[in-house]
Image (tube, rainbow, N blue to C red; front, side, top):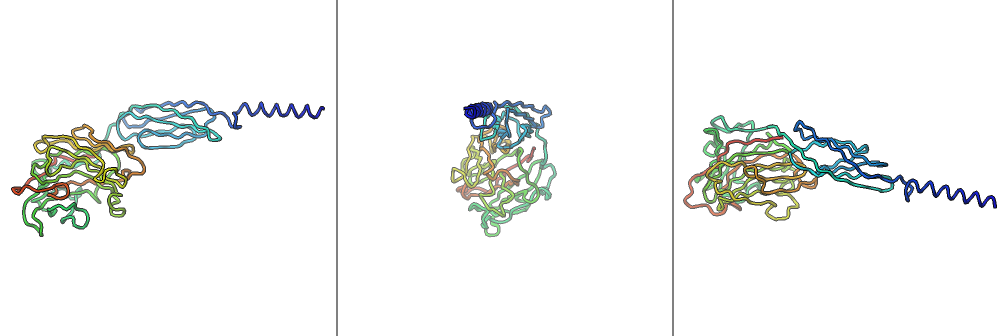
Length: 340
């Protein structure tokens, strides 16, 4: 009888000990608390401190597409653009326990001008900033256009503080039209930030001007795996409509995902065409008004360096039928600026 009593007391003791740590034998995970401190220097830096009793790790989703895991709950995120961000933190405990909490932070970011061309020097475009694609694009980089791209001053020149990309009706190397396609490939590229281009577009029916970017790895992975950001395209026959389109392997629309916005004075006045690009999104804007947003993720090609392209095509897949009376027209660009 004495031995049975001892056994009974031991069972009670073991049961009580397990009860203090939770049903699974692991310490109970406490509720999550988050403290966020936004740096007031407009750097985009936000310091987060998360805590939960008995947590062994924390997974942060900063609301801009970036994720980070830490063990002590302390981390700093540098946001690339101003905005309101919902930050979600998941605390994990032993035995698979988890609890989460969200907080919204308002971040003001002062972007710095890191690259630009103001086109203030008359003559040829700066060769340290711009190269040219030469030819018709029949090697795979064209879209059935009818122009021959050159580097001649007749097709690309700077005067009176603006760059002119000029399309002409003329017989040249077997083509009926000439124009220019300028690009920064191999000279300048960037990852994340804001690009602004102030431009006045051609009015000629059949002209197809574009301000756009391609991923640096296009030569190794090809298109559309490299990604393409069409900041501005003007259809050959719809001169009051601005198209913004993003191309990537998993795009929903076969012609790219994007939107349009109405701009009746596109060919009569200068307007600002922009993209704000972060790890969490790509936003396309006209005159600082967003008209399309794509959520960026680490599965998309928009997380590498891209280079800039400016061109005016004639006809082709998007330019359509060219006005038989067309002789010459141009896209005029006041500046190209990149901020980070």
